[in-house]
Image (cartoon, rainbow, N blue to C red; front, side, top):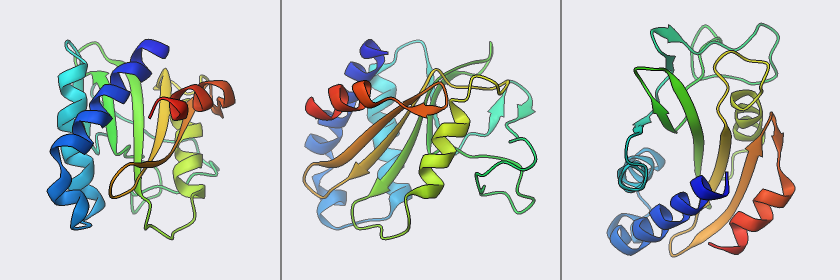
Length: 163
């Protein structure tokens, strides 16, 4: 996971270097997410990088009934990660990335629970890792890493120290 996180750090550095215009003007989270995905894609050759992608092969990523995670689906079943690093054709899930603006005052719980669910090894579509990125206007405001359905404190500290 250190290798993948190192590539994500490089993508974030390029994102902050290249996207000052949208960061300084406090544009929407979807705009930031898309532009970050463009940078991530450059650092993960051989992988597909998509925004709001809710498939594993031809199947929709559905959370089990009774899950504590609220979803973006009006039926409350599908889950849409902000950015995914995956292989569409195999299928294989590497990273799920949730993006928040530092100015977002909504509770973190939705994003945290989503990453716990997306990395839960008991689910058939589990990602190897998940990352919560809190974007400030001039630099990263926070980051957390999730593996195996839980926040990974050591990896989170390692990742945050390199941003």
